[in-house]
Amino acid sequence: MYNETVKSYASPFLYPMEMALVGAVLYHAMNGIRIIAFDISNGAMRRQKELFAAAVVLTIVLAIPAAVRLIQQ
Image (cartoon, rainbow, N blue to C red; front, side, top):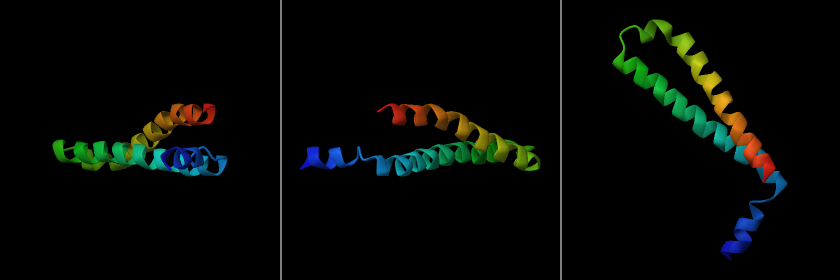
């Protein structure tokens, strides 16, 4: 049963969903770092837009190698 379930994950239909999951996890991690910066820094609240942009850019930069790896499988 396990092997059959794992084989179903190799479906091309699931690749976009898998990439969406990776993107969501990466964004969640980057946003968490942004929130930590708010907590430990006094000037971070004034730079909220820049920190948000940095979180989005880092998410994209980190998602590209993950997408390449998923496509190669």
